[in-house]
Image 1 (cartoon, one colour):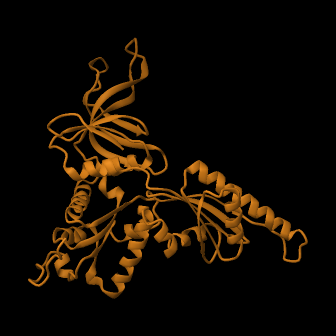
Image 2 (cartoon, helix red, strand yellow):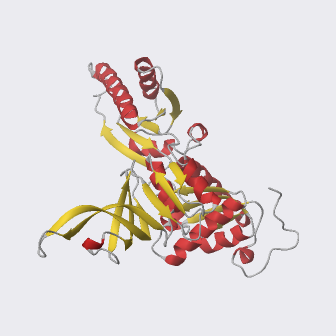
Image 3 (tube, rainbow, N blue to C red):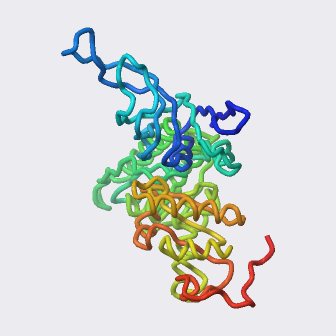
Length: 370
């Protein structure tokens, strides 16, 4: 994300999103009440009073809500027009602005920008993509894993013939060649820096070998899963070797934290918190070591939900906790949503009555030094 301040009071900044991760960072940073100056397309009065023309006009929009859809290259900002060309009479009208890649815009936060939201914007950008292929003798699937989530590209059935079919070996070799070329083509088109080839049989090894011979520069990880196809893809992202290799991707990091959370929930429930209210209480006490939260909460149309979520993130960051924000495409999102949209792993035990605000922590419970 390109960012530069526009005034000495620290209220106005200009940003230029270069990637989907930048748009996502904007969605997480924009708040209700922020002002966004950008160009929108709107139906305005034409040459006569009865006609309408669709024109691009520059407006200053007071933000009411933000919506980000992964893998679309666009961010929707909805709000009320504070300033616009007088001749079009648009002031006071509601408007959606669609922010795309390489589109400059000015954002004004009237109370001034804190350091952390600016750091979030400056540090955003592509964190890497992985192409995942899961293959067996019945099916194979290709998917793209990004910090935003997992996107299944496609799944194809495999028909190789019976084991005594004289054409079977030729069919296997044709399959290996086809999948290897698809992997190379899709990784180039998607900009994937890592290839993960997984499956239950030696077929995965032969595909990996073929990819290496055709594209020696690609980084390839092999792993064993119980099946090919889409089911194998979803199993891959839970494998420890892949988590270690792709740990910088928030969607993978979230999956690892979710698994740790679920383990602690069943074995030591006082070391975890979930639901916004409980996590907020833990955050206020400085107890949150790691937080996973749905991005939809951070730009929710519900004022309390949005403000509470933003306060939690800021509080955890301020006390040097880990914050992982995930979108709806993240494999962990459904489970996190079922836990109230936010889960936390704690630095120390908090009894249920403390997390619910019924009592204060005992004198012996103190935040470890940062």
